[in-house]
Image (cartoon, rainbow, N blue to C red; front, side, top):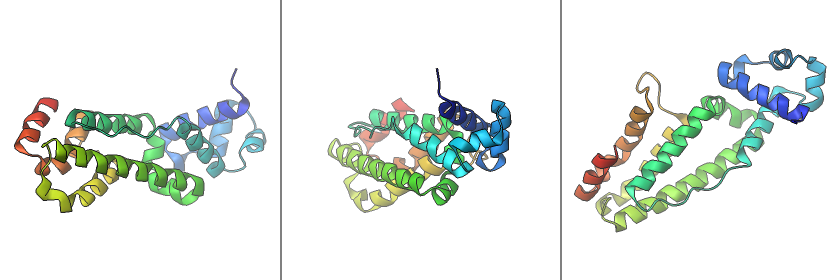
Length: 191
């Protein structure tokens, strides 16, 4: 059986996902649970404490990605990241705001971004070595990695893309100009 604290966090995440962080109050959460606001604030004094607890709970299962060795594996990493965005819309929709109101969330975001940058930079080295990425684009890869991380963290405006396949194609469009002929043939098979 779930603890009261877990039930509060589950309900809060559900409401945050449906309405967004800014449109949910502690009163909305307590009403949804059928408990008093005072009972809720026994566990979480303010909404920021609750959102922080939700993010920390989700982060408990975080594992650094394995460095992709191939374009297929890189595509899989992008797909997993997009799936995370889909499963936790409240977190990604309010990504910047959460880092401002919750210092511990900011620390988590920073460590995940650093891990992702390391993984993507290593993947690029692997793909250059395999002949799928061009060596002569080496000076652009730092910017490309930063751009891909921004897209994965902040998303792509829904007016530009709607389907997961379109989102994936948009992410790939950042890297496609640096693919070799070999890489272009492989990416056509993947996408």
